[in-house]
Length: 185
Image (cartoon, rainbow, N blue to C red):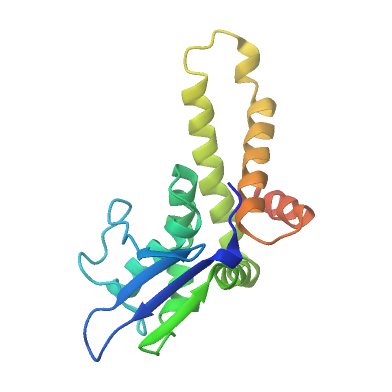
């Protein structure tokens, strides 16, 4: 599922020291942002910004989980990147009213991947683990030994990673391939 970044807008607002209200608009339809406590519960009631605490961590996780879609791989990638995203985009947001587009989320994520050489192997490893587990579940009852060829599994996992990252990050395919190669032992 390729994201329509131009049609995606996250908006936050608060008055004084109160908890913030955060909404997401897709194609002009606005709704409250799900905090995604089902993935990780940093803060039960608080989506916040402007500092490096539990409220900004929950907001970062919520934004990325929404951005990547409600899929297992999206949740896994959100979990892998949300602390970095908090540092780069949420903790530094000091305005009481703010807006962050899907395109801006993508640019922040690219900056995170390029800036810290440890991030790419962690993200690729997390996605590879997810896709390997998915392969195993899909082929659990297979007696065909060809299904369990390591090279075949690795190639399938790599293709899934390329497709997923290509759908959500505005990167050239050769850049994604380079990321995967640097992360593969």
